[in-house]
Length: 334
Image (cartoon, rainbow, N blue to C red; front, side):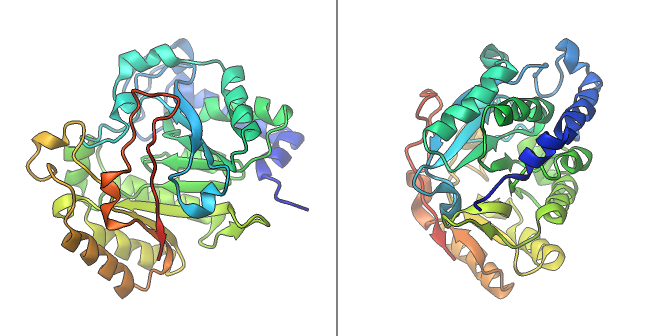
């Protein structure tokens, strides 16, 4: 028998509906992410993420630039949620993540979000990628119930900046099949200066530990050769070691072990506000990237992927085109 996502069993037992009820209670005085704004999103009160009750979807499309064992022949069916709980000055998706008032025009119903999942499945996608899902978790799970009733059977991929609530992640245990978090910084000041959030390393590390508790280090591979369950941690190398790569990678090795699966990325380029900041106004140097790859070797972190050094030249999303925002991208095995 082939892969069956665990959310289907939760749905059949009624547990998924109970979890939606718990999550929606968090929206009444919003604690869905670590900002804990306290606004009543059930009544469309707006705070940090500029998002009310209905989900905001900026784009949904098959995407072939994710990690190879996620993509397969049909790509990942990515659903890009508008707005964000971070304010990264170099965000490659800034046209949808930080264009808050404009993006609210892209609110959709739960039925429509469920239909998007099913449309991507019908187009041959290998999984449903929930991109920037953190501030819409209750809405996503409600839509998954609808989609499951209509035949959704693909793994759910939680593609996040990792500024996530551990309490919310615990509710997602058994709902999400594949966690795909960033680990952006190892320094509090860098997190605040470049993404406008407090305590990013502590919050993200706690979130990733919870993800790891749920799915472990080893990837579960299906009969089709693609990942069906697991944790893949992304780390974007930044100029001038703003990401604190050695500290983050050392933490992974120490806490999660040498079998943790990583995706180390070189695709940074100075977009959005980064071009005006002296430490971020260039792509990374090859020597900077080689240094990070040397750290991987030294820590015996051998599971996962690294991008080609020149990936910043071609991996550049353009969300002016909402139906096909990606030119492309590629990763090479470690």
